[in-house]
Image (cartoon, rainbow, N blue to C red; front, side):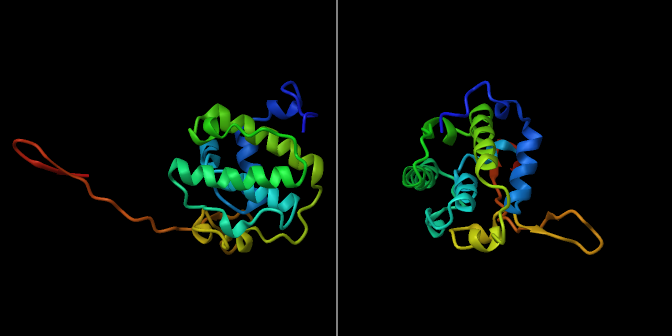
Length: 173
């Protein structure tokens, strides 16, 4: 999609606007642009635009290693090719988790999404996301009684204990 150039207004959209758009569109609760580095967010956004052209059951929402991120981006690039989307994805830069690279990609994606989608219809982001590995526990939202705004649900994360011994004492973190 070469119509979205570097001087397009899309690249002047701020971090907060991008994060709010992702959270609202996908019913998630990410806090940082770097949370999009796994490629799973982009996969689901594309699934809204072009339903059933990306195998959402193969998307790894719990990815935390480079090779897992790469697998998600391969799914995304294959879907781009299937749908004749002419956009090179610089996977090496995105999986590094650098803020600016991921911000620019999400700015481009937001503009591309807005050019092609006016309403996501009855797309159930949570149900679709739950098909993928770790999707059912990926930043879910819940609406509390009397509240208009969804809040992040409590997701239990395993705690790790690290013990370090020094000459005189033991420190547990």
